[in-house]
Image 1 (tube, rainbow, N blue to C red):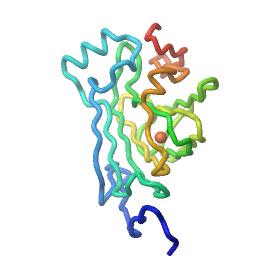
Image 2 (spheres, rainbow, N blue to C red; image 1 turned 60 degrees about the horizontal axis):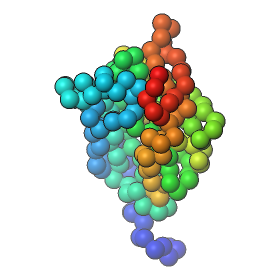
Image 3 (cartoon, rainbow, N blue to C red; image 1 turned 90 degrees about the horizontal axis):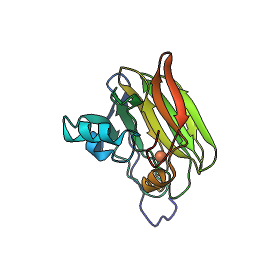
Length: 195
Ligand SMILES: [Fe+2]
Protein backbone atom coordinates (compact mmCIF):
# COMPACT_ATOMS: atom_id res chain seq x y z
CA UNK A 1 0.00 0.00 0.00
CA UNK A 2 1.49 3.40 -0.97
CA UNK A 3 1.83 6.16 1.58
CA UNK A 4 -0.93 8.80 1.42
CA UNK A 5 -1.30 12.02 3.39
CA UNK A 6 -4.97 11.13 3.85
CA UNK A 7 -5.75 7.45 4.35
CA UNK A 8 -8.11 6.24 1.57
CA UNK A 9 -11.43 4.61 2.45
CA UNK A 10 -11.74 0.81 2.38
CA UNK A 11 -13.04 -0.93 -0.75
CA UNK A 12 -16.82 -1.10 -0.76
CA UNK A 13 -19.76 -2.18 -2.88
CA UNK A 14 -22.45 0.46 -3.38
CA UNK A 15 -25.82 -0.66 -4.71
CA UNK A 16 -27.10 1.67 -7.38
CA UNK A 17 -30.85 1.46 -8.02
CA UNK A 18 -31.59 3.38 -11.23
CA UNK A 19 -35.38 3.14 -10.86
CA UNK A 20 -35.39 4.56 -7.34
CA UNK A 21 -32.37 6.84 -7.97
CA UNK A 22 -30.70 5.70 -4.75
CA UNK A 23 -27.25 4.65 -3.56
CA UNK A 24 -26.99 2.11 -0.72
CA UNK A 25 -25.22 2.67 1.57
CA UNK A 26 -25.63 6.38 1.15
CA UNK A 27 -23.92 9.44 2.54
CA UNK A 28 -25.36 12.90 3.06
CA UNK A 29 -28.36 14.21 1.09
CA UNK A 30 -28.44 17.83 -0.05
CA UNK A 31 -31.86 19.46 -0.54
CA UNK A 32 -32.15 22.68 -2.51
CA UNK A 33 -35.34 24.65 -2.19
CA UNK A 34 -36.36 27.63 -4.29
CA UNK A 35 -35.11 29.99 -1.56
CA UNK A 36 -31.60 28.51 -2.00
CA UNK A 37 -31.49 29.59 -5.65
CA UNK A 38 -31.26 33.37 -5.36
CA UNK A 39 -29.78 35.07 -8.41
CA UNK A 40 -30.29 32.15 -10.79
CA UNK A 41 -33.53 32.90 -12.57
CA UNK A 42 -34.00 35.82 -14.94
CA UNK A 43 -37.35 36.80 -13.45
CA UNK A 44 -36.29 37.82 -9.94
CA UNK A 45 -39.79 38.80 -8.86
CA UNK A 46 -41.28 35.45 -9.90
CA UNK A 47 -38.44 33.65 -8.13
CA UNK A 48 -39.03 35.64 -4.93
CA UNK A 49 -42.74 34.94 -5.04
CA UNK A 50 -42.08 31.20 -5.30
CA UNK A 51 -39.33 31.27 -2.65
CA UNK A 52 -41.41 33.23 -0.15
CA UNK A 53 -44.56 31.27 -0.92
CA UNK A 54 -44.61 27.51 -1.35
CA UNK A 55 -40.77 27.36 -1.45
CA UNK A 56 -40.74 23.98 -3.26
CA UNK A 57 -37.86 21.52 -3.33
CA UNK A 58 -36.20 22.09 -6.72
CA UNK A 59 -33.57 19.34 -6.53
CA UNK A 60 -31.96 16.80 -4.23
CA UNK A 61 -28.47 15.32 -4.29
CA UNK A 62 -27.94 11.90 -2.68
CA UNK A 63 -24.27 11.10 -2.09
CA UNK A 64 -22.45 7.81 -1.70
CA UNK A 65 -20.35 7.28 1.45
CA UNK A 66 -17.12 7.99 -0.49
CA UNK A 67 -15.82 11.29 0.93
CA UNK A 68 -14.86 14.40 -1.00
CA UNK A 69 -11.17 13.85 -0.27
CA UNK A 70 -8.05 13.96 -2.41
CA UNK A 71 -7.71 10.95 -4.79
CA UNK A 72 -11.15 9.52 -3.93
CA UNK A 73 -13.95 9.30 -6.51
CA UNK A 74 -17.23 10.26 -4.83
CA UNK A 75 -20.56 9.68 -6.57
CA UNK A 76 -23.93 11.35 -6.23
CA UNK A 77 -27.38 11.14 -7.76
CA UNK A 78 -29.14 14.42 -8.45
CA UNK A 79 -32.89 14.53 -9.06
CA UNK A 80 -34.28 17.78 -10.45
CA UNK A 81 -38.03 18.06 -10.08
CA UNK A 82 -40.05 19.45 -12.99
CA UNK A 83 -40.96 23.12 -12.93
CA UNK A 84 -40.44 26.57 -14.38
CA UNK A 85 -39.98 30.14 -13.16
CA UNK A 86 -41.58 32.42 -15.77
CA UNK A 87 -40.84 29.87 -18.48
CA UNK A 88 -37.26 29.19 -17.34
CA UNK A 89 -36.77 25.54 -16.45
CA UNK A 90 -35.77 24.51 -12.94
CA UNK A 91 -32.03 23.91 -12.70
CA UNK A 92 -29.14 23.29 -10.37
CA UNK A 93 -27.06 26.18 -9.03
CA UNK A 94 -24.18 25.16 -11.26
CA UNK A 95 -20.55 25.37 -10.26
CA UNK A 96 -16.98 25.52 -11.38
CA UNK A 97 -14.36 23.20 -9.83
CA UNK A 98 -11.81 25.46 -8.11
CA UNK A 99 -9.34 22.60 -8.53
CA UNK A 100 -9.89 22.13 -12.27
CA UNK A 101 -10.71 18.48 -12.81
CA UNK A 102 -13.09 16.57 -15.08
CA UNK A 103 -16.36 14.88 -14.15
CA UNK A 104 -18.91 12.56 -15.75
CA UNK A 105 -22.70 12.66 -15.56
CA UNK A 106 -24.74 9.59 -16.54
CA UNK A 107 -28.40 10.13 -17.35
CA UNK A 108 -30.59 7.75 -15.31
CA UNK A 109 -34.22 8.79 -15.50
CA UNK A 110 -36.08 11.46 -17.46
CA UNK A 111 -34.59 14.00 -19.82
CA UNK A 112 -32.74 17.23 -19.30
CA UNK A 113 -29.77 19.26 -20.35
CA UNK A 114 -26.17 19.81 -19.31
CA UNK A 115 -24.97 23.39 -19.76
CA UNK A 116 -21.23 23.96 -19.94
CA UNK A 117 -19.41 27.30 -19.96
CA UNK A 118 -15.67 28.02 -19.80
CA UNK A 119 -16.04 31.80 -19.59
CA UNK A 120 -16.05 32.19 -23.39
CA UNK A 121 -17.35 29.06 -25.09
CA UNK A 122 -20.69 27.52 -24.21
CA UNK A 123 -22.11 24.09 -24.92
CA UNK A 124 -25.44 22.37 -24.32
CA UNK A 125 -25.71 18.57 -24.16
CA UNK A 126 -29.07 16.78 -24.33
CA UNK A 127 -29.22 14.24 -21.51
CA UNK A 128 -31.35 11.08 -21.34
CA UNK A 129 -31.04 7.64 -19.71
CA UNK A 130 -27.77 6.02 -20.82
CA UNK A 131 -26.11 9.23 -22.02
CA UNK A 132 -22.73 10.10 -20.48
CA UNK A 133 -22.14 13.84 -20.43
CA UNK A 134 -18.44 14.55 -20.14
CA UNK A 135 -17.38 17.71 -18.32
CA UNK A 136 -13.76 18.57 -19.14
CA UNK A 137 -11.53 20.45 -16.67
CA UNK A 138 -12.19 24.20 -16.67
CA UNK A 139 -15.85 24.09 -17.70
CA UNK A 140 -18.53 25.27 -15.26
CA UNK A 141 -21.58 23.01 -15.37
CA UNK A 142 -25.29 23.18 -14.59
CA UNK A 143 -28.13 20.69 -15.12
CA UNK A 144 -31.66 21.52 -16.22
CA UNK A 145 -34.88 19.52 -16.21
CA UNK A 146 -36.50 20.24 -19.59
CA UNK A 147 -39.54 18.00 -19.11
CA UNK A 148 -42.59 17.62 -16.90
CA UNK A 149 -41.18 14.53 -15.18
CA UNK A 150 -38.26 14.24 -12.71
CA UNK A 151 -34.79 14.16 -14.27
CA UNK A 152 -32.04 12.16 -12.49
CA UNK A 153 -28.37 11.67 -13.23
CA UNK A 154 -25.38 10.02 -11.59
CA UNK A 155 -22.24 12.13 -11.13
CA UNK A 156 -18.73 10.77 -10.57
CA UNK A 157 -16.05 13.33 -9.77
CA UNK A 158 -12.62 13.70 -8.17
CA UNK A 159 -12.97 14.24 -4.44
CA UNK A 160 -10.58 17.20 -4.46
CA UNK A 161 -12.42 19.10 -7.24
CA UNK A 162 -14.51 21.32 -4.92
CA UNK A 163 -17.56 23.47 -5.76
CA UNK A 164 -17.34 27.15 -6.64
CA UNK A 165 -20.92 28.47 -6.93
CA UNK A 166 -19.84 32.13 -6.88
CA UNK A 167 -18.09 31.79 -10.23
CA UNK A 168 -21.43 31.01 -11.89
CA UNK A 169 -23.21 33.91 -10.20
CA UNK A 170 -20.43 36.23 -11.39
CA UNK A 171 -19.95 34.92 -14.94
CA UNK A 172 -23.27 33.31 -15.78
CA UNK A 173 -23.51 30.10 -17.77
CA UNK A 174 -23.60 31.46 -21.32
CA UNK A 175 -27.17 30.28 -21.85
CA UNK A 176 -30.54 30.19 -20.20
CA UNK A 177 -32.90 27.30 -20.99
CA UNK A 178 -36.54 28.27 -21.46
CA UNK A 179 -39.64 26.40 -22.51
CA UNK A 180 -40.65 26.60 -26.17
CA UNK A 181 -43.40 25.18 -28.38
CA UNK A 182 -41.18 22.25 -29.41
CA UNK A 183 -39.69 21.61 -25.96
CA UNK A 184 -36.91 23.98 -24.98
CA UNK A 185 -34.86 26.84 -26.38
CA UNK A 186 -31.56 28.47 -25.47
CA UNK A 187 -31.26 32.20 -24.99
CA UNK A 188 -28.28 34.35 -24.01
CA UNK A 189 -27.53 34.34 -20.32
CA UNK A 190 -27.09 37.60 -18.51
CA UNK A 191 -25.74 37.38 -14.94
CA UNK A 192 -27.48 40.68 -14.20
CA UNK A 193 -30.83 38.98 -14.66
CA UNK A 194 -32.01 40.97 -17.68
CA UNK A 195 -33.75 38.85 -20.24
FE1 LIG B 1 -18.93 19.27 -10.66
